Length: 262
Image (tube, rainbow, N blue to C red):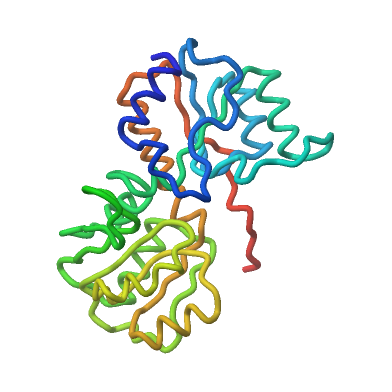
């Protein structure tokens, strides 16, 4: 499958026009590879380590969740990571394509994959955006689990290096309704409360957001940005493999970009 056909297939599923106004979805760098056979390296974040990996593996497309460029750069200067990424992309004919908030909303996107890993049933978006699309997912756990069992399941499925949850939570509380949103989802706490979820799994939560959740009888679980979004990258590889691409692989150089003392 040629690169142009792969991108057409993807955009029919997760249209970049659905991304938020602050976001930057779609092509970040396209060095003239559209008519070539796709050799795809999928990652969460396009970094220099991932670029070097793509060069070594002779990939011609880095397909990332996080944008390489969020805001228009004011300059390109030697020594800047963005400059080096763009230079290497053109030097080695490697495109960089991003699917961010458009990929968050769709079936089998970041939130859906989390819901599936936790085996949530009767799933619906936390915040619907259009027909059958939306941010986050909320659903039912059958049979119910204790909070301790749910946390253990999250640790097993996501393997986060560090997991934080609401203080004074009753670990023996029976949990039947859970909300999930991969990445930075603390801004959706009010919307989650309206869904009657007992637990909200997301990441990048601040001190006072844990306070807000506790005050609103919502158990907040922060499993980290990387851990809550990386599984969707793995799912994307599986989808690309089903298209019989010439070559596709999940990056092994993708990083959490955080390290915790144990």
